[in-house]
Length: 110
Length: 110
Image (cartoon, rainbow over all chains, first blue to last red):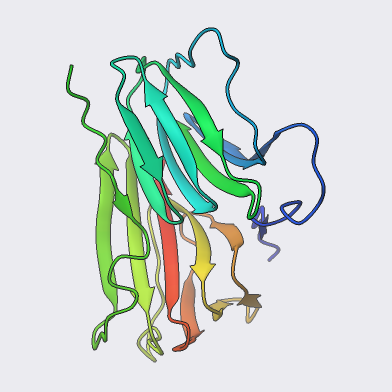
């Protein structure tokens, strides 16, 4: 019996030089998508917000980052911090560390 | 507007002395459950297997571990390694490191 484990390592590419932010779908199933994101000083575009139709549960596995929400609330994230971003909760990333880079795991569902 | 972020940190309790393995549901929604697991030398019971009705996507965020599957296949997991355990894929944990402890994030869905 051969099992499809869809396996990998979340730190892949995190030690490389990157120009663009990396968004890598590492698992995709019915009503669920799991994404690896690597940021290094990258932030959201100055204009506009992320407005998602799905819920996003996100954890910062390495690095430091700051999220901003439309009600001006800011969240400082340290290594290991996680939170749920409910669907249609406008948000943006206003800071990501470069040393170490930010390694995110994001789960979109619902 | 108050947003319910259901937030926390995945390393919580990982620096404490633990006797029992910790299984902590950190998010629960429709058809999805996200669990923090902290193991320190703990393994599955010698008899029997984990046989789950849901798919499990699991990542080892810290530590080292070995999983065994019913076809005798073993998986050595290092920090950052993830894999999908399809529903009804019998498996057990036969090794978890103590220094550092194993910090797992497990997502059950479908």
